[in-house]
Image 1 (cartoon, helix red, strand yellow):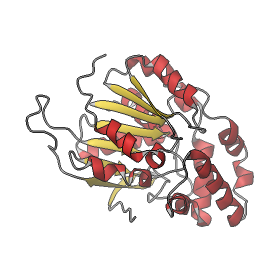
Image 2: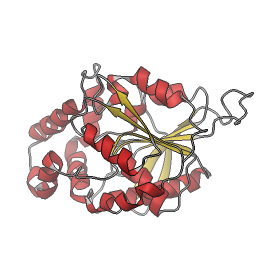
Image 3: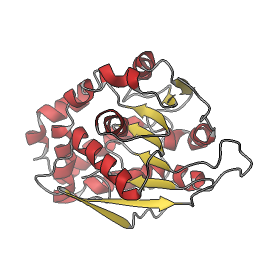
Length: 287
């Protein structure tokens, strides 16, 4: 499947690519709550907006949907000296919302995209209509194990020959799925991290994704007052179910939904069930 982000937004550290699908004002015209507003989808690491390739077009049948690649990821610019940390990505997201003219969109965030969305909401002054966290980073000791090993030894991993580097990236991505990827999907996920620039960008994100940038969020999670959902794959091996429980304990008003038989990449393991949850209107939820 061809996935192209045709628009560009300039930041001090390089451009990010984005696209929109669908039209404003979708949904049932007789709905007393009015038409569904715009929706923004955020990806995580080491993915890109390509992870939403099946979900975004389906959602765009009833509302306008925005997708973008984090700085240094996917089709966005990769170069030495970039600040691609979670704090920087949160600032970029807040600026993107202003650029798009979106005052209160719905937001769906996966993996570290959750931390990016939460930082924009809680620290950068962004406003959301609602928030859905899908196997998302929002606090806790997520930066351990494999992540910590690479972050603390990035200078070593950066020197791997290309075949070894690509094997490492592919192995990590295989660990993210419970059911396996369709043909061509794993290659598409690995592709942005190939070559000299891609390899450098891969380890740059690990150096800069600091645990401290989510530690700042933990005491603020209870202040999230917009309708919130947490959707989690029961077979997630990258962010096991206890991370969902961690978020739910700190955001007790949030709905917690488990997706059986799905791993970290629910978008690949159970796209139909994820789509059904995302299409369910929860605008009437109250805190």
